[in-house]
Length: 118
Image (cartoon, rainbow, N blue to C red; front, side):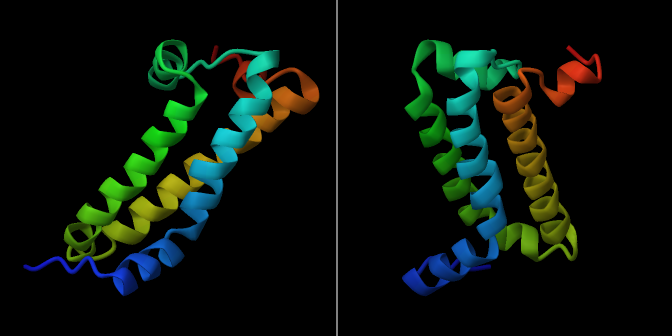
């Protein structure tokens, strides 16, 4: 199996994952920037990145995730509906964490805290 990484395929890939980029990368990162002064990061991996390297490195990690996903996407797409499931799962996580961070910004309490998870 040959993976084609031309400019056209990368732009079509970016279009295909536009909601991942919108919610998981941009939405989560921007809402995290806005929510950090009012709370703390509860996810241990982003918390470690934020503590040791700063907020811009968290964005670089998210961009790195998008690039890694570009290279593994052709393999995932060959196995039926797994690509759609994975794509929608990442989108859903992005929507959830963005909404959670926005609750911290506007209400001072996150959905995770309101549910008693942390």
